[in-house]
Image (cartoon, rainbow, N blue to C red; front, top):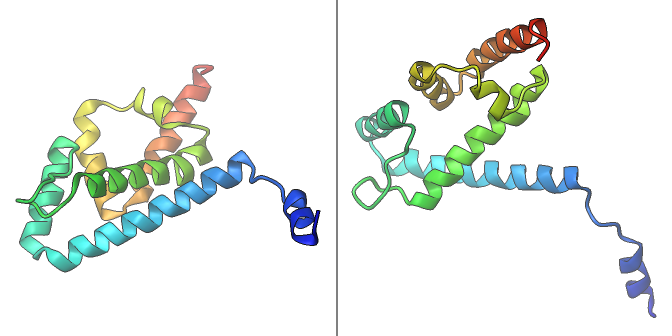
Length: 139
């Protein structure tokens, strides 16, 4: 065995947390790239139309008519979800599943608008109230 092979044997596999962090970082990079392309290729009225559609339906319109590929929309939605989970909900001891157990569907449009605007403080306040209520009820 030569020195390079011995060095390779000494390298440890990344932990699950390291793999998850690398995946999250890659999603963020891809989402940022998609959002930058969206801003560069769509007029302000087009951008607003698409954001309004997302807020109302929870879906980003895709296809040639909208200039957005489905995979790009999926990456952006996944990045929003991961950001919410990792950077907001976990701080309050919640997961996406436990959070949405306590969210009225009528509030989804307002929450999607906050996410689209990057207004994460809205989620922090909401998550804090949910976590307190869960604790009070022994959940």
